[in-house]
Length: 182
Image 1 (cartoon, rainbow, N blue to C red):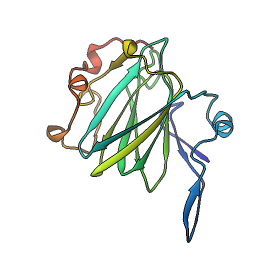
Image 2: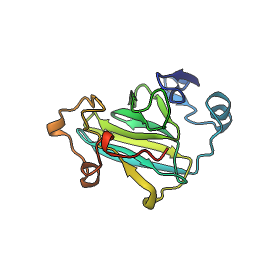
Image 3: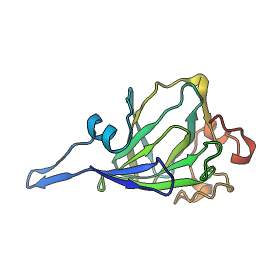
Image 4: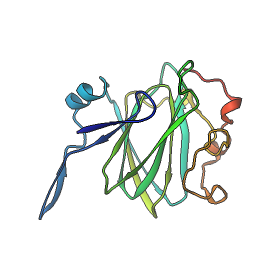
């Protein structure tokens, strides 16, 4: 596994080593030993999967302390633009974001550490998205930021007037109208 650093400290992409032959391909999608050695020690406790259609934007979500979550995400079918926004008070990259295109072809994974809001947009007809979390879902601690907030300047690669968001995501506050819990 190759670790690819991003512009924001702690947020990394992981590129697996893929073995191909006439039968297809094989790769190790996760090794706790290698992840802990190359990225940071994390104990993932919950795996999630979603399926979405083109134009869907899910996010920007986070969980407040003490239920914060680090996530390791990947797209196993289709293509998504995955985004992590730094919400850590005092961070030199506070309010900045990193985006990565994750596809079934490139098999890249994206690690989103504690203290970030996370979301993705679906760029293909259908996308199946998987993520590992290091803390269990706690609905009482969930929070979010409007993914369409112009102050963040995220290009989701989808026409905002055609974006499909949940009612809950449409009600999230703008970045400048919320108090970070991190």
